[in-house]
Amino acid sequence: KPSVEPTTAAQYRQHVELHLVPDLGGVRLADLDAAQVAGFVARMGKKGASAAMVRKVVRTLRQALGAAVAADLIPKDP
View 1 (tube, rainbow, N blue to C red):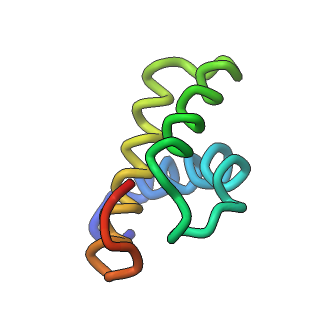
View 2 (tube, rainbow, N blue to C red; view 1 turned 90 degrees about the horizontal axis):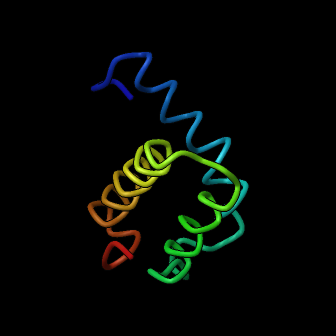
View 3 (tube, rainbow, N blue to C red; view 1 turned 60 degrees about the vertical axis):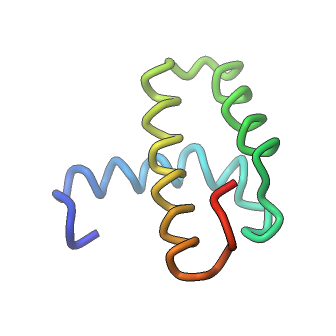
């Protein structure tokens, strides 16, 4: 958060609260796999999310998973 503009941080928070947590929040980080991420992306599209929004949310997820790898919480990014 300190390294991004407040508006960017707000967008990330919105991605997490509106899309990621409702759909993937029940999955343990260690159990998250590529198939679940692909299913999440497909569900976003079926719910009517634009391609641009899907890309933005996936970018947020990718950043979060990259941070989890860097913190040794998971061995690799699903």
